[in-house]
Image (cartoon, rainbow, N blue to C red; front, side, top):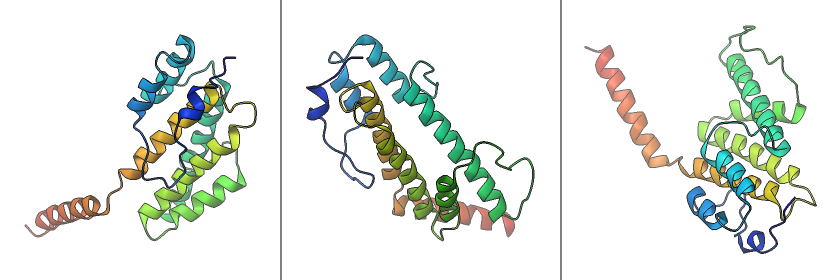
Length: 179
């Protein structure tokens, strides 16, 4: 496994609630030519596609984790809506921590705050699973690009745009109802 002792320390640190971070594209351009072609191909596939990278155990673990969260979200949302159907039941592997965070997120009064909790859950997984020994390798870089994606998603939640879109949808619905 190749280590990137010069590249990794040059990366700015990022945290779950960060407002300033580089784009995924900028990060990939920083890595291009500084890591092996194989590692770059893996990194690019993780960053730019939904395809699972079967050859990387960290990506497979993260994909399993995301699947658990998504199944639990579907189940908790169905319960919140009063739908108790086998279709939404989470029969997959259970994790009490995931269930607890997802339940809290679903029951948040603000959907934005609920979404932030879910993004923090993903961020926490990435932090916990890049252990000692992975500080300078492709696993660290994969975790970094996944964090950039999470921060990008988080920054896409703009209150004013959300209110404007809600008003637009609500006014359209009112017009349809009262015609």
